[in-house]
Length: 364
Ligand SMILES: [Zn+2]
Image (cartoon, rainbow, N blue to C red; front, side, top):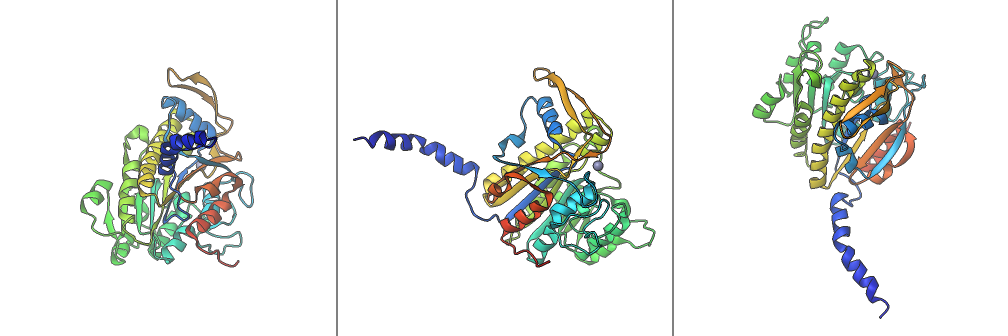
């Protein structure tokens, strides 16, 4: 007799338990990992976007949240290349280095390891494809501003699909090489806009170099490029039965921070959050995809001093025009996401991704 209320309680809870399972797929290992980087995205940047967007963001859909220590090997305040090298390859390096140890030895990135094991790989950014964050996943150079050298490293073929700007480093180079021809010879389709790629691509290997320079900022009419590019690339990569690794970067949140331009930050962050929404829609339906959202560092020492939720108004100020050493938030969803809670180092993101894929770490 006394057991009845318990049984009724469990029966009443069943729909909730089931819907919880739908929200958080309970599989051990993900087949796919999508790493999304908001460059320069600290908690205040997120808070400002939340207020300006009517007190809602797709980021609220995450249940596993952590904090990341960002410092570089040679400086408390990291630059993007050292931070991205840390989470791409699990090793702290010097500011300015891309994909190299402090003693200039090339590191293997999670993207390169995934490629070696037959997974599909992709990069989607709103900057140059050769900018510090994406470059840290495929290039190995001691100077992050050596954009022509970084472009050469794309010829190693570890990136199946790249979408972003930076066409000028493929053409009219100092070494007079025509890298688009070289890539075409290596089996890549080349497109100069996302819409052309959407209409005409018929393979899983392509460079979509959608601008001569960086992609334009939101306030100059970039529109829904980032969300569309992420969806397009996922659609291609998911055809690989071994799974895939995809990097998506909201590159320009950082530039709003450097410019101490609050509106720039908010517009870029809301756009990045829209892409997060599309990626989470895919991951929820797929059930086999780990989504990680974090930042390389905070930029601007930004704080939200006041404002109004009713008027979508943010009053904010900056303490710096550079990066800062404050910890950054991390959000994770899907199989393996439980491992991304607590406080940890940016190099641990690499190790946790390797463990999620069940890839063994190389011996040092
Ligand atoms: Zn920066």
